[in-house]
Length: 260
Ligand SMILES: Nc1ncnc2c1ncn2[C@@H]1O[C@H](COP(=O)(O)OP(=O)(O)O)[C@@H](O)[C@H]1O
Ligand SMILES: [Mg+2]
Image 1 (tube, rainbow, N blue to C red):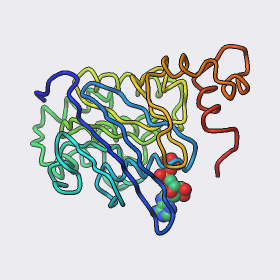
Image 2: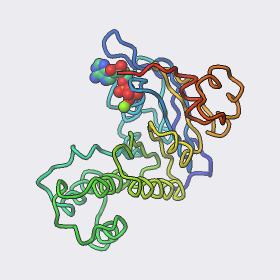
Image 3: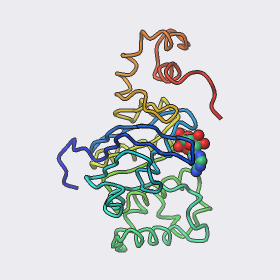
């Protein structure tokens, strides 16, 4: 990659996504820069996954524009997609293939020339050299997560999309994944992830957007969001231990009601 530091990699502008008459995303907008980890937070059903799907070009927005590395996702879908790495759900891998076969398969799909050395380096990097002949289903959750992450970035995309990457991981695997995500940032990738974890948002995200009912209701650094809303009566009223946290801000802005 040879973009200038801070170059905007992803621009989402006025994005609206509907399923039939139901508006899942309405007028969402944000940008993610090279070397930035951007978190999309929101209660269940807020429209996070729909937003990612629109960025991937998997569904047609009702309105708005999305640019990835300067390519309009709707008008130049192949160019845009070549610049995106998406972490696939573990279940979407062919269960009968072993680890080496899966990595080779996806390298082939992305047109990456995978030499024996490169394959070895990848296996080494994800600490699964000794598991290379295991089938995907035989790996632990954390190991599967490492495989899906390495496949998402096998073509060295500028933009990496991760939908709830740490859900269900134990604390060790989660920490390790954070380090891998930080490694992507250090190599200049722009990372857009969704999460329910405020701890994760504070620990790894440079900036976050809080989404609710399809709208982006706040964008800033985690620290700034806490500072800006520290005297907000809604936020103070949900605060539990006197000290305002990002979770207090989140609940203050999105309400206490549990979403289905
Ligand atoms: N394929 C679909 N058909 C109809 N409604 C959908 C579909 N996908 C998502 N929705 C609805 O759109 C809203 C946003 O969903 P989603 O983007 O998955 O939210 P999130 O990822 O923030 O939980 C929800 O109300 C969800 O039920
Ligand atoms: Mg989702």
